[in-house]
Length: 396
Image (tube, rainbow, N blue to C red):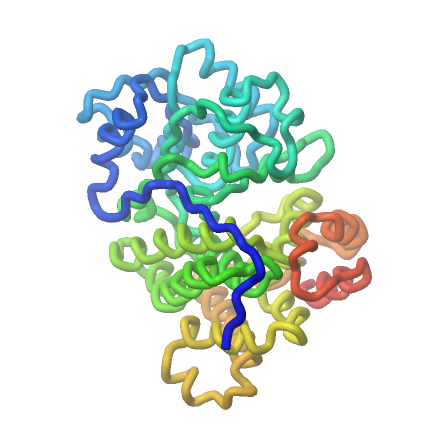
């Protein structure tokens, strides 16, 4: 019998619009929030390929005046970008934010929203966990164009501190967007490799949410639902980006996994992944892809039974029922290895850290950074510096 935690919290406050033509409902949602002049944030690639244009058309058809637009947001957004856009928002008299993009764009919008809503000049003044206060928060609509980060539903913003060469986490339920818009048109042009990488990121979110020390029944439900959608649809989305059913499934999986880890947190895989991003500039999804089976193997001693439970949503009824109960945890890890190999063959997804430009000389700094990451506090198995170095070597 599963024992309830002595205490837990769960909040998922974003209103979700999911389905074809979800974009066309954004104007009404903005009006419901009292917004009239949104600032639209995106990146140059989405502007060039027309993805952003679909959102702008939806806003225009709903008689929404665009107060400002910034499409100069890099893949790893920074404190400098956040402060620049916040000042631009003030100068143009905007009253809300519409973020169209992946995790970097949406996290940038969260950062801008923090600066403006908390009325601070420097976002570092409110860095950390639960340092934000209730008040009038600027209306915020998130339109994800990838299916992995889950930023459209999370309480976390990750923003790079270029001076210190690390990714800084801001954590608060106030960071959850007011509205998350999941429309299959937004991910149709996502390249196969990016589809695979972001999908593995979502899988990592769900697996770590299900096994971390702060797991709870509601986060478990979101995590298992996300894992099943990923197991059934990720490879299809990689093979055929125009498959709307697979795209919609992956968008929902990303959102559900984001809600799961927002209410339970992650673990050692993300702790090392954050460090690899900050020190070695490894794309987050690639880091998650490489580290997931190694992190599961490290935690197996304490999580074998939980991994066994995840075999069902990950691999399906036939594999689950044909695997002896005592072997299901190990089989779940083998399924992750097999999925990663298939994705590598399909689109060249990296399998080793050396494929991402990491060298052994980076290990010490990565490990020292990872061991101080907050995600380590809720990992089911404690880790020392030497443990992280061993994982890095095995993933190399």
